[in-house]
Length: 160
Image (cartoon, rainbow, N blue to C red; front, side, top):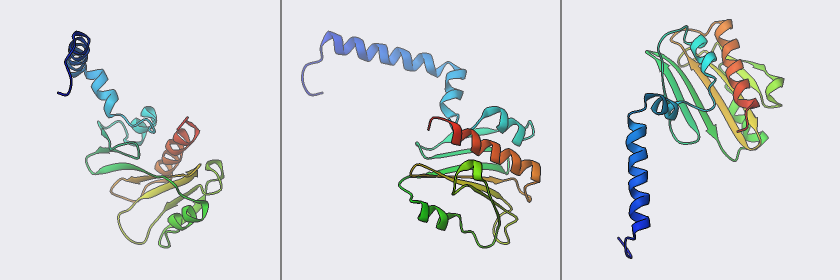
């Protein structure tokens, strides 16, 4: 340790250690730490049809929620121009519908000819490109697609 360890440094370390142990025993705080800020918890429960699901947060730009083989993914890419966002959304083998409420680049893709059955909602907010992908193991129903749009709208309207 460079320099001298002072009494104040020691006390600060002990306080930090105590807080870490307190949090380790607090299941609510631990659960909150794994929740994705971009996901509305009530909409997730509805999307997963009441099944128990888990969430993982991978840095500031990626979240996953899953229950068995049913998966919701969020990927955020920084420094994306409108032209690049349009290219990123050009998934030629999926049906695509514009979502003007999510901005000029807002769209939902579904009924894809290749890959896993899925629906993707994409939009550009500032220079951040958001993509919510719902992969339920079968072609997402219209109701599931509507919930996916609501989840994306929640994130779009948030202070992110």
